[in-house]
Length: 427
Ligand SMILES: [Mn+2]
Image (cartoon, rainbow, N blue to C red; front, side):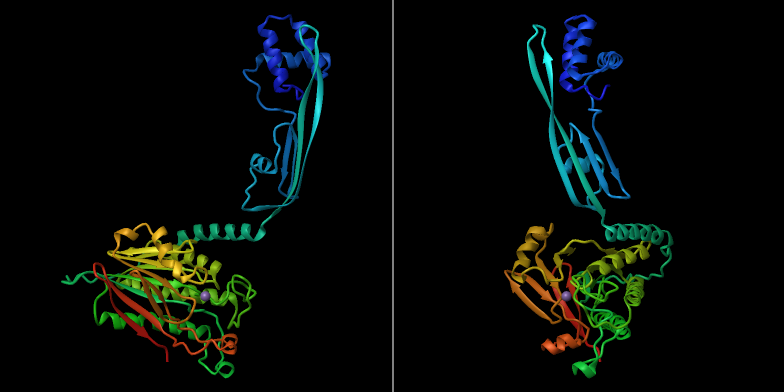
């Protein structure tokens, strides 16, 4: 179809043709209205008769150059930037618009009806241009995650040694929750500066392993757990990037380098989860804190891939700010607790937790404050978990000191709720 044919011209030609007007008259109309030569007019006439309906306006041109990020459109259809982005299939997550411009102008034609009356027909034309820039960081992270997931899934171990106790028990089933909150792998605490305990990457590793297994040892004296919920994250790493800052960019006293910290967390988590999973059905719930939002998420993906073929281990890892977990009559919420008002947590849980009404006992687990505290309101418990890490020089300077370094595990009866709790303290 000739690029100058608009829908109005198309419709008029069809109408004249249906009225059995002579071809010469219709061609004269086309020639006059759209200002075409003889051959082009003949072609346009032929094209219009052959076409079922008026399709696209071929006068328009659009292009997207990924190299320069330049996006151009000229024609009569697209009027806004958003339409242009959609038309060119631009992924708005990956590209952001640096600047853009849109303009409109009208073209007018004189048309004459059968009785020889002249009128003016106006067609609006649009031009939209934009300059885009690739969000390189997101692009690289997405690609890296995709490659990692594929590779890791291929290489996931397929054999794990497991042994489940088949001893039949009289009492109700019990879940052991082990929550190593705010572990801050990579944090540097120097006792000579702070007056309190030293903390380093290697001390963090030892405390993490000892915390998990000393708590399990204590708990096993009371009951053999039917299942374990192992909660990690909540500032599992002290820093989130190569600049040794938190996710938001606050500089931290850091022992070692980011890569080594990251690798140590991966190794340590695999070691602890493998050991827990060798004896018990273990759900691992990863929940990031304000220090490690990206690293915690990617380590969660690493663990998910590592334990993909493990019959007793499940890794729960996603980006939701609050996660919910059910064990029989118990509903648990997990959040780092630095964003929401703690007084809002029960109502947030009531709104978001799908099994809220089916459970009799409701608790929200938080961290962030490196202290233990329990508050209960209308039967909903908000439980702040303590931390095993030591204070660093900034916190010591501010006077945020003295809370006892501790790790906590709790038994929940599937029918009767909280049964017992255990503490472990590093030397
Ligand atoms: Mn925190």
